[in-house]
Length: 139
Image (tube, rainbow, N blue to C red; front, side):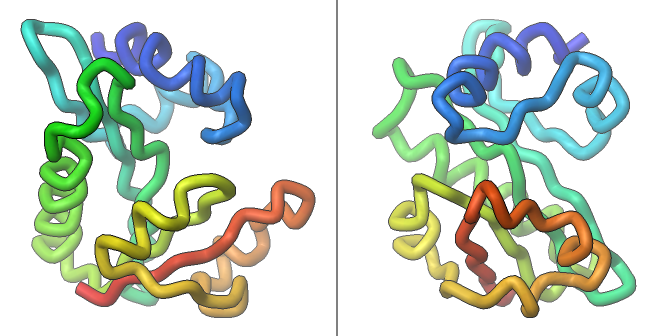
């Protein structure tokens, strides 16, 4: 039921190249990885956690807050929630791949790292053409 609201939130960011494009089908298949923030029944924020349990890491992906609701600490609350969920799963560190919002993650304790710091399965999927920077935060 959240797929339509998620698409409305992330499609503008995908069009700008801020987020990686995800079609409806991919969202439907990966919906269990997503956490949403709502206001009056409308999705205003989201984030996804993709665990790599063999190395006790998780990717934090698709972090987005509706532009009308930014600046109120909602992104921080969403990040804190995701960090706690990751800890509950035994995850020891989170990583993000970003092309535009590095400063936001650095301000929240993420440190720049090399692609080689990613789990091997993620290294194989890394898109060198996108040139995303890698940031890792120990939990």
